[in-house]
Length: 273
Ligand SMILES: Nc1ncnc2c1ncn2[C@@H]1O[C@H](COP(=O)(O)OP(=O)(O)O)[C@@H](O)[C@H]1O
Ligand SMILES: [Mg+2]
Image (cartoon, rainbow, N blue to C red; front, top):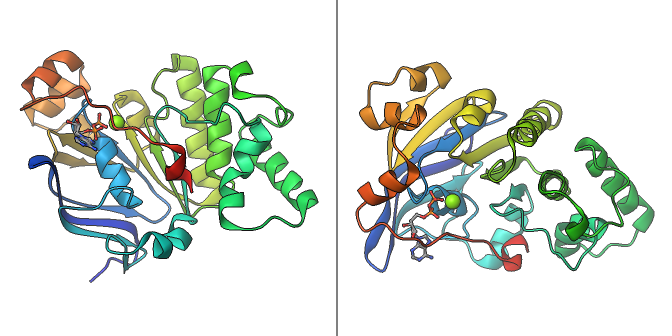
């Protein structure tokens, strides 16, 4: 039975690429109105897991549910109205450089409806930008923005369609500590004010502690610990302790992984349709 407070449920998900298993029997629930953080070293499968939550990847075995409905077997056309209920801020920010801030924000709206009332759209864009402290930047191109400003615009785009759920992939990576904290505060603010369900992928323990209601530690494609911040802080598993205290470098962790690879999962414009 689907859990009625579980907005996204992943059940016994296994994913292999060309026979190489990168996620092994993962089950998790993102609870309604809560922030679930998935943390783990690079290459452990965080992005691949997140892509399954919006069916940009399909399971090798296992099931994905959105609000009680199984979605991993739906066609692209059937997925469209479901994806419209998601907002996403993907790794790399991925603003379209050739589009202004305004055009970037209306991009997902245009993908789902023919815009007739442009006055109303102007107001929506203004409101979303105000939410992230970027109203007034409508006519700027991404090239003229700092890294932190780009993230904020990408966040405004993520909420353009009033999503029920927001997926964030490494929202603070590449930002200095002050800007990272601005993004953490925005994630908390959106959860509070828009009552969204959030799933955040990160390898930054500090943001995890700050924003998470529930933390899931992923290592080498498996969940090795989960619980609230206190539970994780005091977790006896060696790898959890090493990871949260940063006692082992990313490179060492990479080398520990079986068949570690340099492949970085990316997103393209088609993922935003
Ligand atoms: N499309 C793909 N084809 C083959 N291997 C992939 C693909 N996408 C991801 N991988 C592999 O899956 C593993 C997990 O990748 P990823 O989810 O991007 O890690 P993380 O986001 O935790 O850094 C990596 O070993 C990566 O090389
Ligand atoms: Mg990743």
